[in-house]
Structure formats: C-alpha cells, structure tokens
Length: 561
Image (cartoon, rainbow, N blue to C red):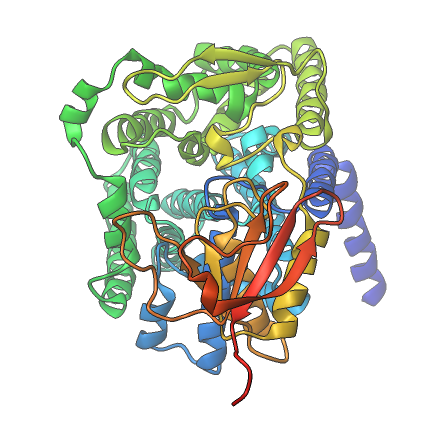
C-alpha cells in the first residue's frame, strides 16, 4: 500500500515538474529571485515625504502592539483600535509571518512575493474556468508574473496586491459555484469571505470588485439555459450578499463612526463629483491611464508582444467577453469619474483579466505563430524584469519624456525606452536605477544614540531630511515601535517638531531627546523652533559613506546646587 502511494506521489511530482506548469514555475523562480535579491540589496524604496515608505510598517507594528497588549484576544475594542487610515486585515495576516521570521520592514516586504504568487495562481485558475486547457492556464499565470507592475509591487509591503488576490479569488470561487463545482452554501460563503477580506484590506475593493463580480454573473447568465440555473444564481448571490453585508456591518459597528472608510471617503472623493468631474477633465486626463498602461504598467516591449494575441482573441471566440467589458467599463468609469487622483496603481486590479484574455488569444493562434510569439514574449518579459530590478542605464532603457505637466494637474509621463518606467512618483513600483541607497549603516548609527540615551519621547523635525531627501519622520516612528514590540526595553514615542507657520503644535508632549541634520559647512544646531538655551549637545553621528552628519540634543541640566 505504501509502495503504491509512494509511486503515485512520485508520479504527481514528475507531472508537475514536466507538465504544463513547469515553465511558469521556472519563471516564478526567476522573478522571485530578482525581487528577493533586490529587497536584500536596496531595502525599502523612498517616495513621498517624511519616509512615507514606512507608513504601512508603522501601522503594522501598531497592530502588533495592540495584539500583544490584548494577549492574543480579539474583541470589538481591538478591532476599533486596529482600524486606522486603512483597514487592518493585511497587518493581521502578516502577524504569523512576523512571529516566525521577524518584524522588520525588509522582512515584511518579502510577503509581497507570497501575494505575487497567489495572484498568478488565481489568474491561472480563472483562465482554466473560462474553458482554457491547463497549459493555457499556466500561460495566463506566467504572463501576469511578467507584468512589471505586478513584480514591481511585489518588492513592497502594500495593500493593492493582496486586495487584488482576494477580489479575483472571490470571482473564481463565485464562477465555480455557479457552475456547480461548489454547493451554493459553501461556495457562497467562501466567495463572500474573500470579498470581505479584499474590502477590509483596502476599501477601494468596493469599487473595483463590483464590476468583476458583475462580469462573473453576466458570464454565467449567458450560459444559463434552465430555470434551475437561474434559481442557483439567486441562491448564490443571496448568500454572498447576506454574508458580506453581515461581516462588513459588524466591522463598521465595531470600529465606530471615525473609521478607515470615512477617512478614505473624505480624502479620495473630495472635489467635483460624477459627471461634473468628467466635464472638468480634458483629453490629457483621459489619456493618462492608457499611456501609463503601456509605459509603466506593462512596458512598451512587453506590450508589443501581447498585442498579436490580444488581436487574435478579439477576432476569435472572445471567451470571457462579459467579464472583460465590465472590468474595462466599470474600472474605467471609476478612475475617470470617481477618483480625483491620477495614479497608475489603480490599473493593477484589472490586470488578471488582461493576462487571461491574452493567454486565450495565444491559444487560438496557429501552432507556428504560437511558438514564436510565446518564445519572444517570454524572453522580452524576463529582460524587462531584469532591467527593472537589476539593470543600469543603457541604449534600450533611456528616459524619454512623453508628456509635460498640464494646467489641469495631469502629471508628466516618461518612458524608459523598451523597459518599464516607474509608477507615478514611485508610489507603486520604482526602477532600481532610480532608487536611492538604503543608508543602513547611517540608520544603525543614528539609532545607537537613541538606544544609549533611552528617551521616552524623541523629537524629529517634520519634512526635513536626515536620511532620505524628503524627510524620515515615519522611519523614526517605525524604529521606535520596532523596539517596543521586539526589544527587551520600550522604544521611544516619536514627536514631530517645528510645524509650519500658522500651524499649531503637532503633539502636546515634550521631547527629552532631539535629532537634527547638520548642513554641509555648518555648525551643529538645534531645530529652529526650539530654545537653544535649554538644550545641550548629546552626540554627533557621521554617515560612514557620505559627508553628512546628524546631532542629538538633550534638555540642559544645570550644575547641582
């Protein structure tokens, strides 16, 4: 019996290693190696102001601190406290990983690889459900892995990848349930839970998920041929709706009136609404997303390889057309009419259906064309990935300005030759040759002074550079929290100093240690908003790799009476 089981197990392993998923697994290994090596070599990618790349890690460690204080008990109060600018699901799901491997930002960033692989798997499952063979399902997964926006975002700990995994996972389960592969109760429950996880990872899933699920319903509606089919549709949708509303309602009740949903609504949907926003937007707004899709999300080289298969799909059976239409129209209207901000990260949730459609189109091509196009696409996709994560400037990736800033606040767009460009302001994905050094030695030297002096409150000037060009406030907060949740002693609370003119104090507490940058050629000095007579120099830290310096001050203590 054991012999037979062993033979069967070995057969299955050989089947996986030599079957239609063998090449996608090799591609996954190549991409994951590039991403993991980049995270190890270059650390977190700076963007925005005040160390914005550490915002998510600060939120993650705050959730961990709440969990530790609650002794592992989840209550309504815990849910309310864990909900912040974004819902807490991503941070809660990361807690077991941190318990096993550590809670540092660079280790947490590696969880992006898990979401990257899961999203590719979901794309393959969806392609298989649309009538594709296992080989084509593997091609869909492989195509998604080659998209720069997907493996570029896998270098980060952020909400978009897991949100997209849960959304398309919910769609795949819903379609399988409608087709009778799951019972209505079980399938509806799983689809609802995945949908709720997507929403409680990022509230934008409400807008992105509705067209996806509508497309699945329309797909099934086209296939439905009997009253039994329509009855099944009603039962499944009722189960999904009831469970989703119940879970989301319970969360909102627990988190109170000041929750992440209200926070998102107040910032994301300010300004003109609906058709008024569409009227205010000119052609430059409308061209932003198509242009960014080519130059930063996919890359010109890879996009040119995908076009023949896309045309083949359009000229063929167009399997999955209702889903494609609802995603294109629904997501497009949301981006143009619903969202005031222009950001190419918002294109990520629609990419799985693009990968599936291209794979289906590739399948319908003549065998010779299919082999040639497949080989070219694979080679070009791997080159684009290498160029994005490990390449240097060269003739094939030179920067080319395509559009300049316009009067209606449309940001400029630049291409990087045949390679993929960074997302807008580097918020979603950033080319390695546009990333600054991690300054690990300087950071450790700075924190060694804090560890020595053990302040309760550390004062840091807001929006002023110490390590990164646009400020480091969130890094200091993250580093203090890391000591609080992992160290033998409590780390300091970080206070932002020196608000702009006309702005009230950031916080009421007073620091007992202050850090400031020393400009080149200047003498050590306090932040300008503090009284120099009340502080004394505590330490000077020099960056081992550059000429910059930072100074620490403590409250002045006069001679004993």
